[in-house]
Length: 77
Image (tube, rainbow, N blue to C red; front, side, top):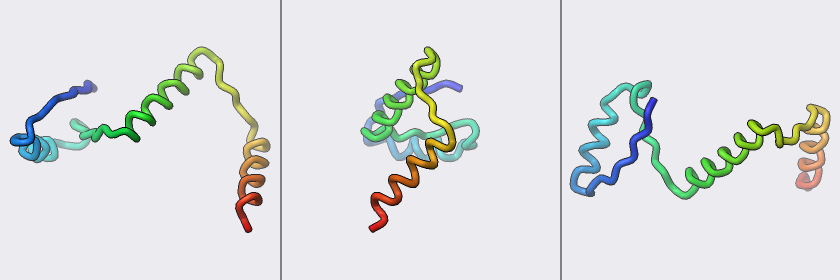
C-alpha cells in the first residue's frame, strides 16, 4: 500500500473526499493528520526503533499486575 500526501484547495476538498469515500475501505483509508496523530506517530516510531535495536525494557505479567494494582489503589479514594 502507498501513502499519498496532497495539498488540496478548499474549492475541491469536499468533492475529493466524497470521491474517496466511495472507494472500498480496504483500498483507500483516509487519514486525518493532526497534532495528536503526528505525536503518536513520532512516539510509536521511536518505540519501534528501540525494539529493532533491542533497547526496549520488558516486564513480566506479575510486574504489570503489581503496577496496575498500585496505580488503582493510589486513585481509588
